[in-house]
Length: 57
Image 1 (cartoon, rainbow, N blue to C red):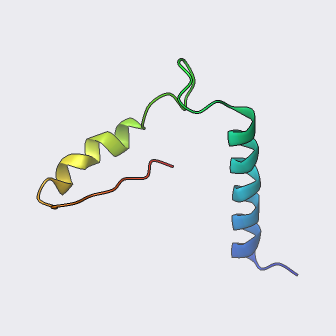
Image 2: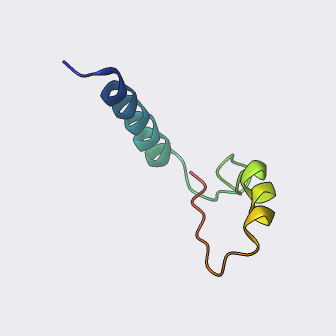
């Protein structure tokens, strides 16, 4: 039997697989069109980092 964390991860993967299969990334007018405002707002806290990668997932 799947434990709770494994169940949650499997459900989340199923959701994201379906979402990205059925939607076009960066399509104008969709919620996938641009990064989430919260992520953009947090970037200023990382100004002193010499290198930074952000995954807006």
